Image (cartoon, rainbow, N blue to C red; front, side, top):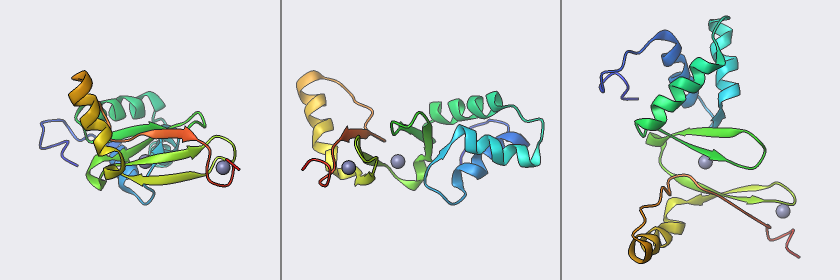
Length: 132
Ligand SMILES: [Zn+2]
Ligand SMILES: [Zn+2]
């Protein structure tokens, strides 16, 4: 991640947040990152995790999404963008490729002059099973 290249100090705690973001799963919540950081730095505060995530968001290095379960999840931008379909009845979550809604972005830009942030969306509704 290009934190250092942009002139930000890579403190051990920041580095651990970045590591947690890139380790394994595509999404991770601040709480899960905090658990991982605390395993190495027992006194690490979750506000440090949030501050680091805010910085990474500002720099466009992570995107966030709320899938309706009360936890915001973070995704490293360099792993590419995608979206989610979330069933409000059974809770199943499908991934949607970025291209699936690229026309929507064009419409918003053309019709409303609005530059939408469409990097990581959650679209809520009913899945094929539940709509019947
Ligand atoms: Zn996602
Ligand atoms: Zn469903």
